[in-house]
Image (cartoon, rainbow, N blue to C red; front, side, top):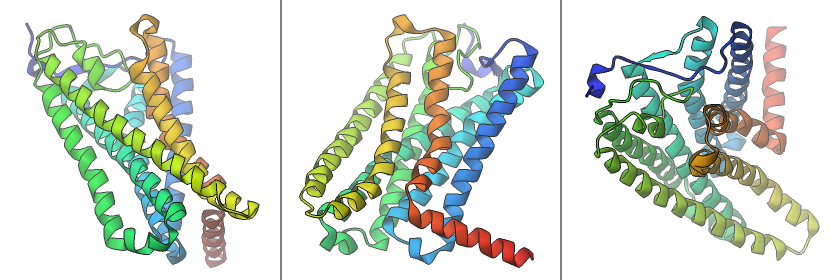
Amino acid sequence: MSNSSSITEFLLLPFADTRELQLLHFWLLLGIYLAALLGNGLIITAIACDHHLHTPMYFFLLNLSLLDLGSISTTLPKAMDNSLWDRRDISHSGCVAQIFFFLFFFGAEFSLLTIMSYDRYVAICKPLHYGTLLGSRACVHMAAAAWGTGFLNSLLHTANTISLPLCKGNAVDQFFCEIPQILKLSCSHSYLREVGLIMVSACLGFGCFVFIVVSYVQILRAVLRIPSEQGQHKAFSTCLPHLAVVSLFVSTSFCAYLKPPSISSPSLDLLVSFLYSVVPPAVNPLIYSMRNQEIKETLKKLIQSAVSQHH
């Protein structure tokens, strides 16, 4: 029985077997990664540089972009490296780092999306109390709670998973190290501890999901009571991007973790995990900036001032 400590590296699932396809995947992944860096980077820059955007909604959006940058940087660079050099290996410590950081950013992001739904609820249902309920200190505490929750959750799961004895080889059926795939390599009953922890996390996640749904039901009722169509449209337009991001995040995660084992195959698992780990961080900036006039205006001003300084 080999212990996990005697395994020095893991083998990840390649995106393709032929060299031409591997190179094609490398360029595709590089394009997605650069687009995510650019999109999230522009949102962070716009919010940081324009004092008009120093409001709770944009403060949380800045945090979301930071988390998106972190989560996509945990998985894609290694996948690109392996595709480019026709490799599959990842070191034991690299694998542990991927598990930790991916869970950290993923957990913190879901907590933050829950807080953002509360922000929209207060803005639309209790606008007179907005300044008192979401003052700058309250916002900082909420954001810190989201990051802290992600960190603690990740620490627990990672510590538990790496202490498991592994005896079913070192091939991970995934393009990055993730806990369900590592559990498949374990042969002792101690993996049930981790399954229990996953259940606790799933219950907490479900609690957050219910909170988001209830918030949006209240928001919808409040918006429908607004007499003017223009007012309704304005209220909806501040909520739609957040709702779209939550839907994308939740639906891709559900597909990954709740699909029946009977329809499981390595290529399907790879596609689903790609959807939930890579698509949201890359698409979120687009969703937010397309519908948001203020961010567009700020970016236009920043680009114009950069160009005029250059000339």
